[in-house]
Every structure is written in structure tokens, then in C-alpha cells.
Length: 157
Figure 1 (cartoon, helix red, strand yellow):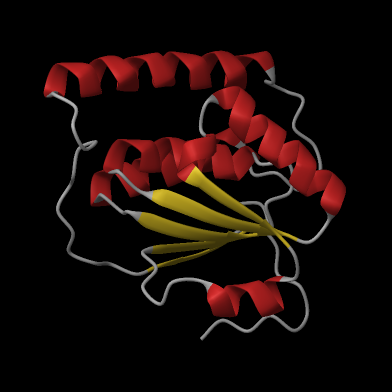
Figure 2 (cartoon, rainbow, N blue to C red):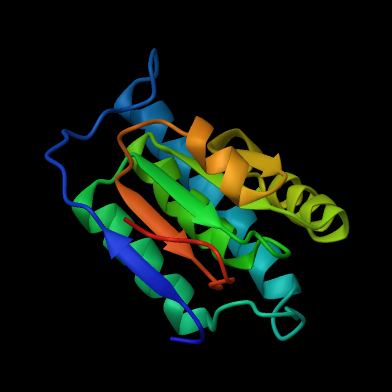
């Protein structure tokens, strides 16, 4: 994996559905979201830049999250949102949410626009700022931690 670091903390959690929706509604909404995300990803195929992960890694992240039914994830280094799209898409299946942190305004803005256009914004808490400071304010229990880059000074404990 291209400059990627995974730390996965297992946790026993039951899958939950969307509150107030029947299984038919949930399935229909999930299929609609899947189609929207796939259209978005296909429309951007081959255009992702910077230090985004390869598609195969995005699919692996998706599979890990869905199979293990993770409900929360923290990503440090949003970039333009490619890895976050895969993570948020998977979390849409488990009832979870991604917290993603980016320090550069241009990348943050592009990522937020990508999350919206793909239909995944409600599964993402995108934060602009220095991860050294913002990570201290994240929930104590994280199920998946994903860093696309390591920068000097970030310590993983």
C-alpha cells in the first residue's frame, strides 16, 4: 500500500440499521447511494492526484470495514477525499461515521465537495486543522484509524 498505515482495533459491535426505516426502505436507499457513489467514482477514475491510495487499497478498506461492522474511523490526511470516500461508503453500510482531518484548506475544500457530490457527506465529519491538536478532541473509542501519510511529530500510541 502506498505510504499507508493501518491500525485496526477490533471491537465487538452489532450492526444497526437506519432508525425508522424498514428493511425495504433501507435496501432501496442503500442501492440508490451505491449507484450514486459508483457513478461518482467512475466519473473520476484516473483523475485522483496527490498521495491518494490505489483503488485496490480503497476496496480493501471498504471490505474490512463492512466485514468487521466497524462504526467509526479516524483518517489523518484527507487529501482530496479518495480514501475517505471508500471509508465513508463502507460506514454507510454499518451505520457509522468517519472523522477525517486535513491541514491544507484547498485539499479540505476539494474533499468536502467530493463527499457531497458522491452522496456521502452525512457519513463524514471533515475537520480542517492540525491533527496534532484535533485528534485530542476525537472520541476515545475508535474502531479504525487510517493515516495516508506520516509526518514528523505524529506519534501513534
